Amino acid sequence: MLAISLVLAAGVYLGFALIGGLPTLRHLINQLGVSGAAILLACSLANYLLRFARWAFYLRTLQHRLPGLRHLAYYLSGFALTTTPGKAGETIRSFYLKRHSVSYTDSLACFFVERFLDVVIITLLATLIFVSHRDYQLFVILVLITLLLLLPLLQSTLPLRLFRSLAQKLANTRLATLLTQTATLLQQAHQLLLLRRLYPGLLLGALAWLVQGLAFYYLLQISGTTLSINAALGIYALSLLAGALSFIPGGIGATEGVMALLLLAHGVEREMAFSLPIINRITTLWFAVAVGLLANALLAWRGIPAPDEEACIKPATSHTTEAGKAD
Picture 1: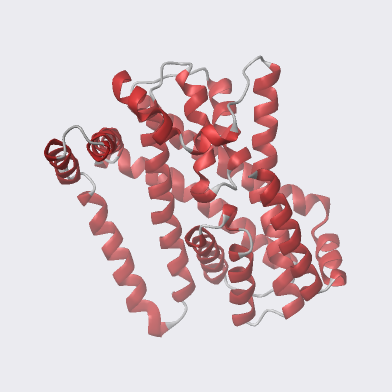
Picture 2: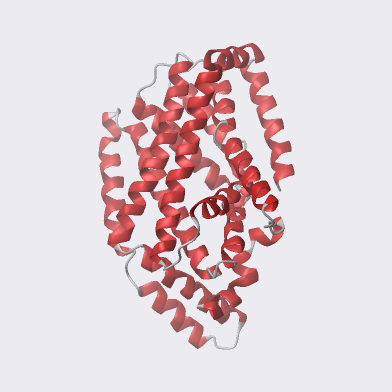
């Protein structure tokens, strides 16, 4: 999957470079310089560390405590497979954590809540693109109110009762087993979505993605593009959502394409609009992949080999039976 993603990305970035013009891309790289690139990568690293703090908080909530640096390596190792559809490959962490008596149900519940809160946060950031437009301000307010009202409803146990009721009616079938396992996963996730744990998780996630969005704004400033910070954050977030909804591995092509179109719509010159997404994605997505590969290499050096990629993509289906027993 990683090899396919690299080939796909190379083709997309070559196309973008040709459309935007190689001289423009070289000029942008020169403007950024070593110090500018270091700032972008530092922002990405801050994003990863804040998300790890949230992840560790969730596992502590589920009564799991692991050695700090090794746990960080486990978490970062998932980024090596972040280009898998839905970032499912990041569940490689579940296999590492199982060696520390963390059940698959617990680690997958953390993964589910992480992804869910990220969607909420990025959706909120995406609405910022409309703030400066009076015609859309009511829409922004309605989106914010809707999301804030829905969050407390996540504490409801209705889905759990529904899944278990259906499982009982469909006893001794594969669907019943799947429903039971899903209910177990949701039960663990439910513990992480209680208000006293929901809002700390939201805060850490919001800080993580805000830092990454500000890095994009910094990149725009370096390029000489005069967009407001609201527009920059909104463009970045909408591009991520488009990539996620495309179900293309890593959103490759979709994220960059939407980002370029939004930049064009905001008056950015075509050459720059097609060059900026390349720099952004190299310092975010591909930097994450590089960090993940390094974490896996360090773990292997310490005698902890990584599981194969296919197993990482489907731990929920391959190991949920064992997870249910462990709980």
